[in-house]
Structure formats: C-alpha cells, structure tokens
Image (cartoon, rainbow, N blue to C red; front, side, top):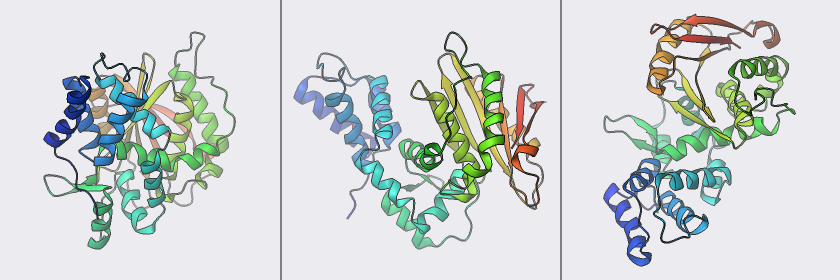
Length: 314
C-alpha cells in the first residue's frame, strides 16, 4: 500500500500543526518551498520539516521563523546524507524496468514503446507523476536532484586526485581555469571513467557531473534540468559570486551535428539565468571516432542571441 501525495493545502495544514504546538511559524516563502520541492510526497514533507525544525541549530530556536533558506539547507542535508528513504530509492535505480525509463528521461530523450506496466510501477513507487497535459515527469524536484546525483556516485568515487586549480588567489571560481582543468581531466581520464557509470547511455553526463561535484565540493551547488524529448540536460553551477550555465548534448550515429540546435536551446536557458555566456558540451558517441584525448577540443561560437559560448567537443 502507498500513501498518496498530499495536496498543497494538506501540506500547509501539516506544517501549521507544528506552529500550533510550538508557536514557531513558517514564513510564506518556506511553506511554498516545501510544496515546490516535494510536490506533497509525504515522506519528503515530513523529513524536510523535521530536519529544519528539530535537527538544525537555527530551527531549534522556537522564536525564529522557519524560512526558505532553512528548507533549502534541509534539502541539501537529506540528499548529501542519503537518508534512508533516498538510499532505498537509489537501490531501485538498479532495476532494469526502472533504468530503461529513467535513463532516457535524464538524457532528455523521447520515451518510446514502453510497457504501460513499467510506467505504472514507477508511478506507484512515487518516482514518476503525470503532468496536467498527460505526459510523465520525475515526481518532484528533490527526486530530480537525487537521481542523477546518485548515479554519479560511482564515477565520483573513481575520480583521481584533482588539484583545485580552478580557484584564484581569493578562492573565487576562475571559469577559464576550470575549462582548462576539465579538458585536461577529460582527455586523461574520460575513457576509463565512462566504464564506471551505471547507465551507459548517459555515462558522459554522469562523469561530467562527478567532476563538477568535485569542483563545488560543498561550497557551491550544481542544479539540473532535463525534459523528455528535448535531447539535452542543462546544468547550473553556482560558486560564490560566479554562475555557469551548461548544456549537455550527445551526438549519436545517424543524427546531425547538434551544434545549431544546442546553441539555440542554450540561449534560452542562459536568458533565464541572466547570463551572457556559457558552455555547450557535445559528447560525440558516434562509432568509429578517434580516442577521447585526440577528439576533445574547445571552440567559441555565438548563440542566436549574441551570447559567447564555449563549445566543448568531447
């Protein structure tokens, strides 16, 4: 048996019971953030609120309102510590009927000829939900964060020692140095690390995310967006005052060079972030290509909106 998701009103009612019992209030922004992050998934609603109100030092002060920043910190704690529910979720990702649905979704590919029983299984697990228009999507933002981060754990554990040469003397992120570090890393370690990724079709995405997690290393964030049928995964790396928008695309056999489409898609993503430049990473997975160390290079291109894009061919 599975407890159904709370509605937004039920989520607020549950949180306000804490206020009635303790006098500690949730700001309107915090109430909205709990709903946005969980979409009413019962375990996540309770876990976020418990972490924010009873485990965090700030939350134990009942005179202090619970704000959106405390909810965001609680979310990071749940994900980084792989608490029981999320750890069990990771085990499900190893199942074949889960993999052949989640893998193309993470890559932004269209879902084709999938058994209805498998979609129903993932929906019953709470991994998927149906959008208003009828399509399916990952059930909530926390799961959208957990799934690729969990899959990147093995490549991340396999990373060699990397000196943080991407930081300047003030400890700020230097994007030019970061680009050089990634190119050197990919040429030397990309090929063997691809074999460590549990999902073959998105192995390059997972290795790149493992590298970027080493970059942020608890001092920044790495956010992900992906959409079925869009053929891409978008990443936003935030470190101090620096924000970097990236788009990841794969060039497969029988398909045209994704450069033009990628530049247009990245343009829209960067506009939403308020950035005038970013990275377009094209993983060439066509058969018969030279080794990674030979084909990896970077070029500059202008997006349709006039943004300066670093095009990384990997």
